[in-house]
Image (cartoon, rainbow, N blue to C red; front, side, top):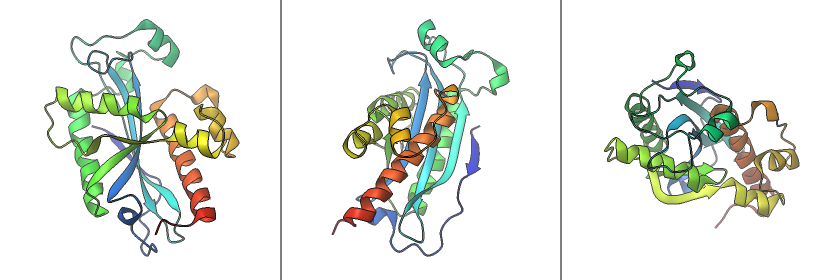
Length: 217
């Protein structure tokens, strides 16, 4: 089972609903760590997702964090170069490993519940090079034959692209530093750490844009 951490309590009187800002979609910040680059064959090792909300000042803020370490599925491929890069043992049970189905079915349901709670129609994945993360999320949903994947099947909000536009940076660490967000390279490439930084970056860029450009009509 995934772990849950509340980052901010629900705001009671936001000036408008998040569905009104993102075309009825709920942004969910996602990062995955994997055993390779092929979502069909390579193991999904770590997943973290953070939901967002509008605060009482109209700013975007984190809400809840969901994270889990996943036991590689039977027959999955793991590239040594990826494991060396991540610095983890994918079979180390001390990491509280959970089978894919046991991890992802409840996680999908939790995101669907939040989508409904915020009166949205679908989650939209927010990620740094988010199409990569979405490809693994869609692949695990297909392996599990999970028909109610809460995420839009192909659209993403990409913080690398937003970083290039707003900050002139595409690398996560550099974009964070340009936005005034501390970034510790020693903690990078953990799904939990990277997702928190991606969420902070996304909210920071959104709030900066909204402050100076206002809300779409």
